[in-house]
Image (cartoon, rainbow, N blue to C red; front, side, top):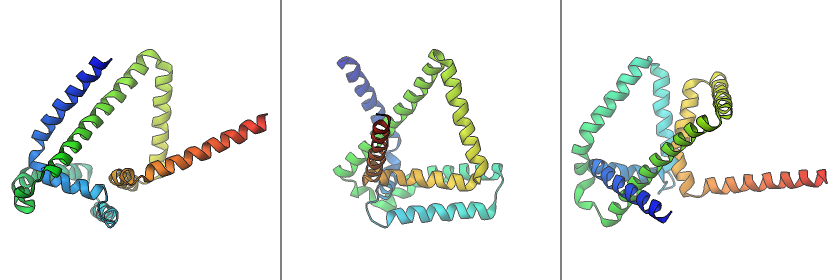
Length: 203
């Protein structure tokens, strides 16, 4: 068991080092985005929601076709991939890179690698469920897709996308400030109270 854990840790460390090397040119931008997403300043959440709202209002106003929107998105990504490595050192200053920043950059890359591993693990568990319990697999998948389809029918696609993107962008800050754990604990306590009340009634 310990040998397997050591092997897994070595693989994660190796992939983290590779990812650090690949994203080194984006280091300053990633650290700046990390500070914003973790709400290092109290006005950062408002700025995140405001920027997201402006972008989605612009998309709603222009109402581009799927092909146009996809082309513009890929074009912006290509421009960023070309310009960011060139302009980032001039804007942020490469001489300001400190040991603390390097450590934080290493942590971010490690978290990205671990998140990728979790997604792959979930996919493998889903495939295993399909092989071991096909009826439960199809029932779960079909019911989940039906629920998503119903929600998509009730809520405008762009608004639903806006809510999803806003939540994902606020999620790191919510987690960093303990808001998620706080309300999850409250919900757990309420559920436990309801279960205890139900048990008393049954007695």
